Image 1 (cartoon, rainbow, N blue to C red):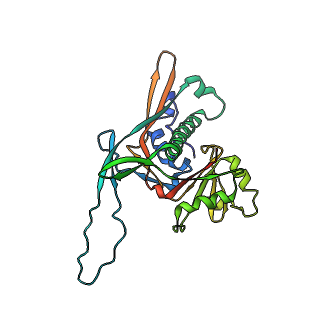
Image 2 (cartoon, rainbow, N blue to C red):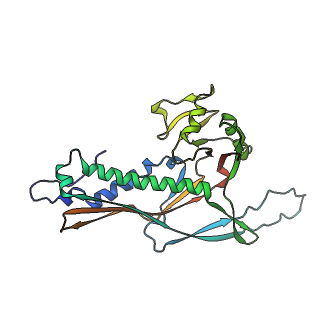
Image 3 (cartoon, rainbow, N blue to C red):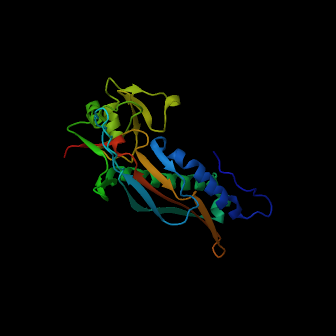
Length: 287
């Protein structure tokens, strides 16, 4: 999809080709499509337009299972213990500079290429942050009246080569809750081993849920990502990871009239966090 630009007819300046408003709207529209985690990411935009750079997340404790009661016996009333934790919104940004000569005489459509690369750069950073949250973040758990940071997700280990058995072992963390979609994010090296297995089912291009989705093993969709390190994988259900957007992507433009260059920046404000720790398992090779 080409980026809409202003008409570059007589009287138009070079800087009119790539307007901040158009570019910002283009990136905001396309950025989530460029992130492989998006179908499994719970995106919350309720923060847009609200002041402040800190978000207060509620954390609830479980009331426990129900009990047996005799006839006429009063049912015990339990309280849902709740606490909160403050999380700070982060800012990411990227900038480019184009000379008038590059725009006017460069072979190819450098204006659209600039917009596409800004989009790719923003999307790549968000995706990196999502996997870092899965890898190193912490689940917020209410314990004894105060918020304590606990290990965010379940983990599973494997030895030797990465095989389909590692997926089955990781599914133990889900207990009896095996229904619904499950996806496995793997490094290309681990994927190469899985696709040689007789139980690997190849997925045709039209049936892929995201880019990098090439097959299925035991009902688990396999998605290849360079963001996953060799020797690890993430088994996930939809909604495991959450993302809060502070506002729509914005772009700004400036021009240096001395050297005839045009500067463009794109920036996003957001945070990523573990929303449901019981929906994701990190699989890692035994050291």
